Image (tube, rainbow, N blue to C red; front, side, top):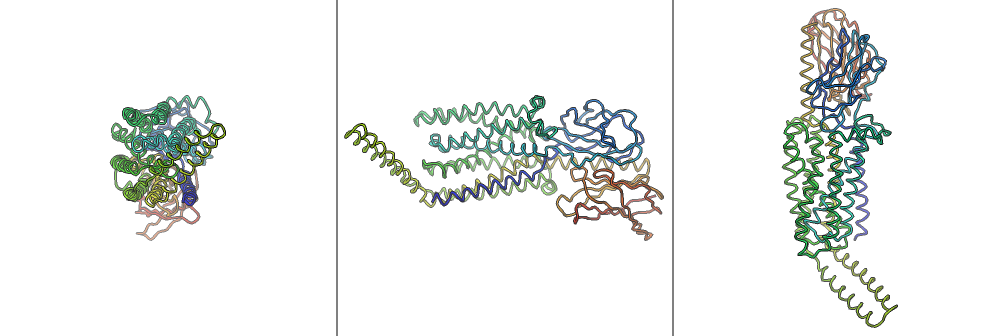
Length: 633
């Protein structure tokens, strides 16, 4: 029976790895967890005089480096001077050289948000009048490239190692103490420790390049590593390594002295290992909570311990599930149905804790029901909830198999061969020495191998145990995909942050539009669009200045939903005065920079309520037209 199952197991494992790889590679660079909510000068504005400095406002505190804020002239030359500085609150600025000529300037930024994720972007403003620019801002992303992929892979492996280490040790200590002497179980837990340690070292080396240049050659830059050690994320990774040293001591006791103790002697040692193991596991979980989503934003003091409990519940459930899978498939020693039932109870408690903490985290990170469908974080969270529900359903099937599982008489079969071997050994040693004793030892080994094979056939023949093995394997498969989705989720901007940033940006845009209208008669129109294709959502902004009869300057800005410039192939504008049956007057603006289009001397022949229709094409086949009315003249 084992020979027919093994190929299926290998096929399933390969399929799951492929799914996880797809999830990790399509996740893209880490989304901005600190969003740009304002700037001075504002995006796309034309100022009469060159400003003394450029300032950017984010939704939360960010960390700066010497090159975090740069301002480039139309030829791509840097015109900022000195280091970026904190203006106040969440606003940061950089000084500019004096006497800058007219033209379009590009502002680029790359900072690190308070929850340790890199944030990058760019926008343009003009002095005097817009001009062409050689600077492309379409590639301004953070956490991308080979280094970004490696960092995402390291995060996935660190979560996997933590789950296997903590959950496997908890399974042995709390559910199947005989497993301390089982080699496959020992290799599983030690493998979890090695995976988590290796992944943590990898993340520590990659951190500087991941939040900076993104170059593979900077991975071993000692200066960058020194800077990383002074950050919150670096401190969390170093703390994790120190706790892993304590975890190594725990593992050596669990699979060394603990296994050699008698049952009565194990009680005190079990209590001590449980206390020590819980402290170390909680410390490891806190190394994530102290540096990521839980550490910033609403109710951080409550969110961090809740996040620790959430991670421990996940590790106890999924790591214990992995250990049970190893016990059912790889262990020669039979696992008792009582141990499976104990794990079933532990898993149920873990699911309850997981749901309770997950509900709080969802409320904290989303803030509204609409964020479930309107933000990427909410959409991924819905996928995660679906996977958890599926996992619980499969676990229910496993509980049914556990209830029907009855231990076979393996122990009786085991004792009988042992007695026979002892008798055969005694007989052989009494009759002869030398060559005879070697022959007796050889026969004893052959008999032991035959006994082991017979025990395994007897155990595998139990239909309830076979059904349990299949259901636990299915649980493990769903858990692997769930872990991949969770890893992507931790790299995605929380829905509450995304919606707050959109609201702040809309308020800023509305305020600036009102100010411009009062001062110069300019009109600004914001229109959301969706071409229906992949990555087809965004916002198009049309500016008319001075919005009067005669010649006007028109600027069109196309942005993604997160506020970044949207690199699209074509934009067209048409003006219609329906009351006088004039139009449509077609306007084809010129591309100035990524996401920025402009047209000079746009003639508007008559005052009135003009309909402004904008056609946005995001691909060869995906386009849409949106419209809005504006009072001209």
